[in-house]
Length: 404
Ligand code: ASP
Image 1: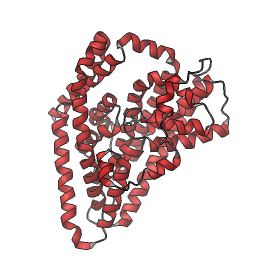
Image 2: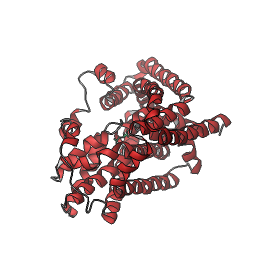
Image 3: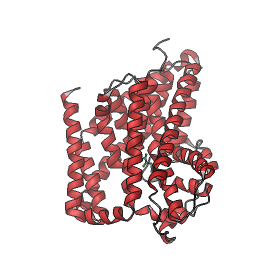
Image 4: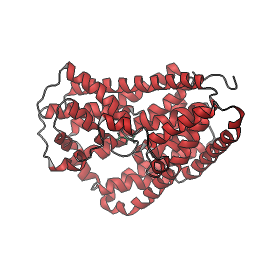
């Protein structure tokens, strides 16, 4: 590994730790630096739309014909589905074991109005969100799912028009390279950006004492979520070792992306860094371009696990027992709700309504976990990004040989 990479990883780690310490020590005073974090976040977001379009089109066309795309696509979807399902099962296991909700009181309804008022959370809405009537407005509004669908279709069609596709493919290959260069430039600011993001967030949450109080109120719930996420992190690591050519240092190389995920609570904003880290870790470019953009948008293991724990926690708090049948419904709906969640902060809290509705739990229950959600979001986003990164390494082994 290049010495400069090592230095950057250490600098980012120091930035994150310094952010936590100064947020705790100086509390709301650190809100003053939040704009620096937002600037970094905006620089990352600025790259997402061109990067996703260029990466998906260049990634798909580099796979060759549509049949190869079908095979790799099938494997990728299988990976996403299997790991998300494992995540939900782990969530259900730990929440049944620890039972964090038993004895916790019920929630008041005012708190949750901001969440429950959102109406775009049904299954039909998720399916409809795959296609946008206007790709330009989808790009302008950062609706990534329809952009990915468009890019996939566009690239698939490109592979069917013979030599006429050469210039267009070269254009998107070039665009992808340029965007990756920009990522390297922006990454230099990551230590300061992550410091400011974390310090500013802890500051706006009221500093160490306020956070401690919030966490203690539902401490056993937070513990359950974080325990489940840690177990899944290790399961993904095992999958990496068993099904890919990568080993321990892959985790180290991905650290920059994982810390950024923790700092930003957004897997979409982290995507440019995830791609760059995977590239530096030697993952096949085709796998990176195909698996990571789609994964950042639909593959959310951490979110799925969190949703299953949160819903069971609410049921326990309300004293409503969830039998095997209900837990099977939670299993299916939490998986789908995680797919529907955007890679932005606290999106999982909104799509969780689908799961609550499916098992007839009161939406107000969300009020119980609202205060700590920003905190847990960071852990689940880190696992979301780790799940995508492991996916890129695993799918690499199933790619067709280049130029065949
Ligand atoms: N913040 C998560 C992400 O970007 C989504 C969520 O669970 O809220 O991956």
